[in-house]
Every structure is written in C-alpha cells, then in structure tokens.
Image 1 (spheres, helix red, strand yellow):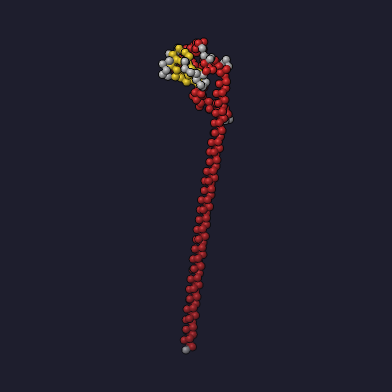
Image 2 (cartoon, one colour):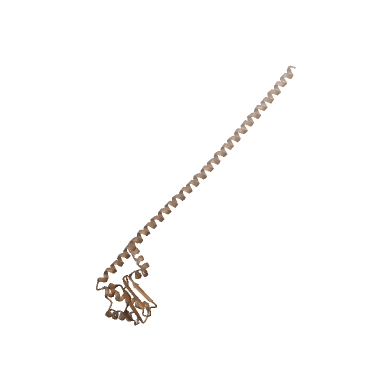
Length: 212
C-alpha cells in the first residue's frame, strides 16, 4: 500500500514537472514571439518614420525650390519692368528732344531727309507732302528742290512734290500721299520710332544694362 502511494506521488510529481516545463516553454515561446513582434513593430515604426522624414525632406526641398524659383522670377519681372520704364522714358525724352529741334535751323535738313526717305519708299511719280503746322512753315519750293536732288542722287528716280492742301498734321513729322490718294508713306516721329523700336530698345539695353 505504501509502495502504491509512492508510485502515485512519483507520477503526480512527474506530471506536475512536465506541466511546469510545458508552462515554462509556452511562456518562453510567448515571450519570444512577443519580442519578435516588438522588434518587427519597432523596425516597422522606424521604417515608417524614416519614410516620413524622407518625404518631409523632399517636400520641404520642393517647397524651398519653388519659393526660390518664384522669388527669382519675381525679381526678373521687376527688373524687366524697371528696365522697360527706363527705356520708355529715354524714348520719350528723345521724342521731346526732336520736337524741340523744330525751332532750330538745322531741323530743315532733317525734314529734307525725311521727305526724301518717304518719297523713295512711296515710289510714285508725284506726291503731296503734309506735316505739322510748325514744320509746314519750313517747307517751300527751295526745300522741294533739295529733296528732289537728294532723291535722284540716292535712288536715281524723280518725283514731283507739292505741299498738301489738307489740314496740318497734329504730330511731328511728314506724311507723303500719292497724288491719286491711293497710297501714303507715314514718316512721322512716332511712326519712325515704332519702325525702329527693336533696334532702339536693343541699343539702349546694351548701353545701360549689359557689361559690354
């Protein structure tokens, strides 16, 4: 009977030992799994944070580049506007200078050149000459004779010129109209500036805004 009791006690002890070992194994496995999951979670979190930091860096660089680009474009636009204001001011000053020259005796030669240029461009046998009231006072038969000689010298052509009976022009310069009235050549100051606008603006820009 005592032997049977010992056997039962040994069996129970063995079962308890096995159960304890199994419990420890289960706990150990659970701890290992938990540690692995924790490590995986930490790596995943770090990967997410790293990606977020990279995206934030790229986004901040993109924003910074866009801001710098916008600032650079705004500076260029402002500079171009300022340059345009300066160029336009110089052109207006030049127009006023030419206008003030109308009272100078040397202005007569300018009119001769303008009329001759318009006559050659018009390329007709006869034309009427019109100009501002101040300029019309300088135009006479003697001037027409000088213009005719210049035309013959420069182009080998002849043209008969007469003073227009139309009302004087409001703006400075001359306009030649074919006697038949079909075509005209505008050689007024504003028109001349418009025709040479690109060359004028380029010359001013190169003089004032380049290092050359």
